[in-house]
Image (cartoon, rainbow, N blue to C red; front, side, top):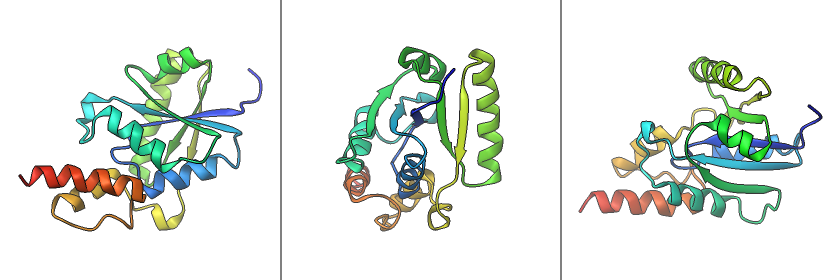
Length: 165
C-alpha cells in the first residue's frame, strides 16, 4: 500500500465539538484530504439524527474544500473498503479513550489487515470537551457555545428547547 493522501475521520459527532474541529485541522497538516464519516451508531443512541449530524458537521467545516462529510451505516471496515481508503483518524482525549480505541483498532485490523489507525489529541484547550459533556450541560440549560461551533449551537439549542415542551 502506498502513501495515504486521504484519511477518514470516523465518529458519531453528536454534536460536533471544537475538539473535533481542532483534530480535523491537525490531521490536515499531515493529509491532503479528509472524509468525515458520520456513523449512524444506534448503539450509542445519538440525540441527533444521522442527517442532522451530517448537516451539522458540513456547516461547521464549510469553506474547506479538502474536507468531505458523509454519513454511513454498518461496519467502519466495510465503509473503508467501499472507499478504497484504509487510513482512519481517531481522536484521543484521555487514557480511557485509548483503551476503547485500541480495542476498536485491533478488531478492525482483524477484519481487514490493511487498516492503519492514526490517533491524534486535540489542543489542551479542548482535551476536556466531549459530546457527552456538551449534551449534559445543554440538558440543564447551560451555555455550550464555548465547546461547539456556532453551527452546532443552534442544533443543540433546538434539541433541548423541544425537550422542554
